[in-house]
Amino acid sequence: MKTPVYMDYQATTPVDSRVFEAMRPYFCELFGNAASKTHSFGWRAEDAVEKARRQVAELIGASAKEIVFTGSATESNNLALKGVGEAYRDRGNHVVTVATEHRAVLDVCKHLAADVTYLPVAQDGLIDLDQLRDAITDRTVLVSVMYANNEIGVIQNLREIGKIAKERGVLVHSDATQAVGKIPVDVAADNIDLLSLSAHKIYGPKGCGALYVRARDPRVKIAEQMNGGGHERGMRSGTLNVPGIVGLGEACTIARVEMAEEAKRTARLRDKLRDRLAADLDEVYVNGSIEQRLPNNLNMSFAFVDSESLMMGIHDIAVSSGSACSSAAIEPSHVLRALGIGDDRAHSAIRFGLGRFTTDEEVDYVGARVTEVVRKLRELSPLYEMRQTVPDPGVTGHVSQSRS
Ligand SMILES: *Cc1c(COP(=O)(O)O)cnc(C)c1O
Image (cartoon, rainbow, N blue to C red; front, side, top):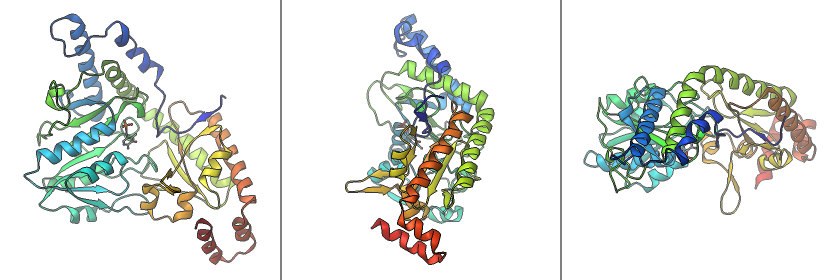
């Protein structure tokens, strides 16, 4: 086994070598501009792009003409929210989204000249469908709910969400960047009108994404956000990233063929890691629903341990904490805060992201290292000591004081 061990597949994934081989010819030999209509260089590039469009469409149950290539899922989210906001302004300016969305949705909402409702989530990370129903008004133009969360892996019930929005004639956008290629996603069955995805989360290259835009029942209009050239049927101008798009297409085909098997494998490894940590350590918690969850995500809190200290102790293992550096201090993420699990649990959260190349050996190693370092850190913790010797449950009240 090689170190460092990569267990941060929700942040990005390596390019699958099969994807890389598919891309390779499109750099130096087949380098044409897909918009060149007058020669074979352009035609070859266009053929490759159109094949990729079909490959992406097939993975999510769309038709090829409904796929718009972009530079990232961030761009897809921007195009969906701003594009719909602008195109449907005469209908209203109210958007409903969720507190646990990715920054690439939340920051766009903040930027929109719109009235935004942020639905809360329960401690399992799921929204309440009745609250969604109540939030929709006659001025609502869009409901944007992520398919699966990038931090806690929790899967929202898009099928029901879509049904509720459809009854009210409201469009649904889903940031499905973490879900696509990991679990079955079908824009028809799931009642989704716009969907964002990204190549680099599914073993494709960075800098390539796509937006699905429904073409019928209803035909969704979006206002272009990038002017110049009218590429992608006027929805996204700019010369197409042909190698990137070829890579995204190949990544989608591999995911479609191998998804079921891979999900089974990563879920087994994930559960093995969770069971090991839960057996070896007391006071560990899984953050977010266990049932409604991506097969490759484990987000776990280790009480009395600071996630930054833990990550420093396991420096040969690449994971993420649920925290981000704000101006003054390390703060728990908006996602963990939204769960209402308390600061202590949020400050001790670690995200383990497993993937296509994760091995049993790596899981065993990570399990052993984390156990060792958590035990060591707890030995140094007077609060943990106290917790062990004084069986008064009221003692947990002291824990929060350590964070002041
Ligand atoms: C990674 C990620 C994004 C951003 O994707 P990029 O292609 O890196 O811009 C957006 N949403 C979710 C849920 C993600 O996981």
